[in-house]
Image (cartoon, rainbow, N blue to C red; front, side):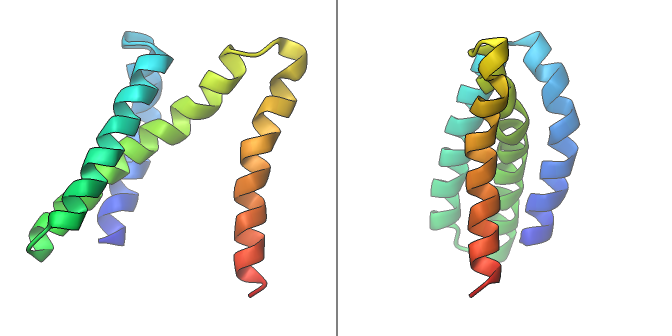
Length: 104
């Protein structure tokens, strides 16, 4: 299940750049967030391993788009002087969570 997510995630990250140019970063982010939420709900209702793997792959595609479009949206909506700070808050939160988990 984890492998399906990671493969889909890795495939989607470079594709999300092209998709954000075709649609827009904002639309891509909203669609990916809704898709990730829907795939999560489907994971909760999976009745077989095959379904779970498929739904986790769907989550991976949407998660890859979110991780690529999210920081770009932060930078696009902020002034150039504040872009570093705008990016540091969510990135630092992710790093602090991983460090805290590793120290357990």
